[in-house]
Length: 618
Image 1: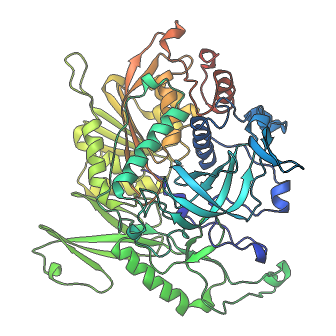
Image 2: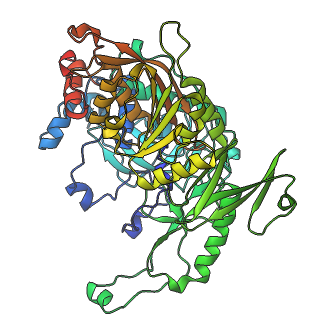
Image 3: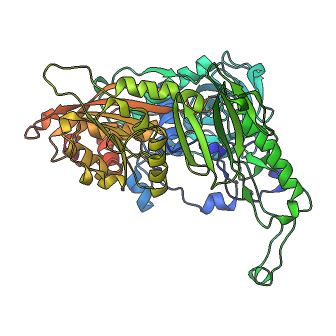
């Protein structure tokens, strides 16, 4: 299963302290207090595919495109770990021409002098140049070559922002969005459907037309493979258009609002003595303020389904009613569940309380909201039925799943070949509760789903039975993915593998196993197109000692989360046989990673990539 959701809806830690005179209503997602902690805390090295690394790659590319910096200057990650100044840090410092006024009143242009940056918490107007792959705008100001990261903006917007924190070495600053001075051509605030937009961290694009959102998400996939795959552009096919969601609002079948515990500090002694704090008024119940560890009170969320929104209203009232019973903060599960009956059933003519009735041509669905993590939820995808523990993961946009699974179905098999045997076997790695294993099983003699989580395997086996699939046709194994091929004996030429790893992607051991097993075809599904690009790059280049590598047939994004900066990726790969006795058969890593020259690319690969054939890069 696809195991991740936009991070913006996940509750963070409790509110951090801020000075009263520095309070801010909105803050960039990665903002930190400006003060003692900023001076003493050492910045952590970025990780592949992380939000920070994706943002920095986009910033470097923008700086290079605007000819504002040396495009080959990068942070020396090895030096960062040792604490030494990073290579090129003097180049990365914000430098530009400065106009100085002499004693005689004449102005003189001084080249190469460092431009003072706006003071923290000062307000300035900036112009947004583009949207980064993180969903934030990248803006410029006439006073310097610094890039300003501004949430809730679109290209062309002129906006007022509050400067929060400078990263002079990397040439960017984090800001809070305050207001729109002049809207750009892509911005239309009449499209905004939520009164919390520009405060809540859940959505980034409500002011943009949906077609523009899809174009942006296509660019996210393009940049991911440019910046993280380390592949020559000729090895990466043209990215196909992003498939949109049938629903742009009212699509999320799961939300998890939360509230913090009663205010006030208790010592360990107090706790041992049974002392506790009580709420004196209802706390904010909702999601995090953009960039702050502070809960924003949210009465309604328009991207939730009708059943989830109904449950949200009900549970908010329950919290207030039972306020004195809460000793600590709580995360509230809101999960939609569907009961389906045929239209000729007597129940189809009723409307149960606390449910949403949806009538179709053949059946009627009654949708309710579950709040018990251990209860069972039910979902339908076309005629397939899936049950899961309500608190466990299942894809949160049911409206796109029919199109999504149909696309996988249409691309899981290669075109017929008179010389190659037919593919009869299907391996679903990271299978979860069986979405792909079950929906694709009719195409194969045998399908096997493998997942590390035993509860997921239990649900998957139950789902196979619910869909009348016998064990000999559709089976599930609980095993860690890095060891999954130990129990598989299928002929490689007759096998296709679907990969659907968590956000961090696949590890080196798994990729090495996959290359040694060498299935004829691989379909890689990912909720993080940046780690997907990294892993696909490994499969295309191959690894030392392996006689197998892959070529990319197609790449495409799917918009599971409209109004947000999140995009799912699907990559279809075909096996290519190589002779490892000649290094020329393995494509060399590309040196086009954003702002990275060929020499530095080797350092980055050795430090971060789990790839063994580094000699090709040197």
